[in-house]
Length: 164
Image (cartoon, rainbow, N blue to C red; front, side):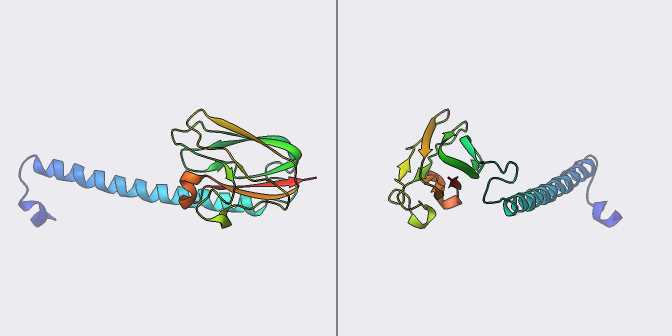
């Protein structure tokens, strides 16, 4: 160790030690962040796997009105909801990013990202700026998969299950 510091003179040792400590701290923080993100993903996956056909894991009761936020993290929150037939969903965009909620296979880049039950009409919010909102009523029971057109490539998708 002495030979390593032999070439370092005066205040350089202190600056070098501080730089090394900062690097170690930064690497440690990165590792902790990765671990936290992994834990969040595992927790999210287990929540998703416990979702039943009758409702969400948090609340198994189908709703008549649901609020979905479009986030800066490029996600719909909540991503999966259960709604009673005739119920409505309102998407709000409190983020700083332009989003859409699109259930129209003709408007998305990959039509397989959108699914509509037989007899259901396609729908699209258009582009929503921050503070924008859009409401859609769902009368046909079945599964609706929808996408955010600007963020389709990063898998910004949602699912609505409409029950009678």
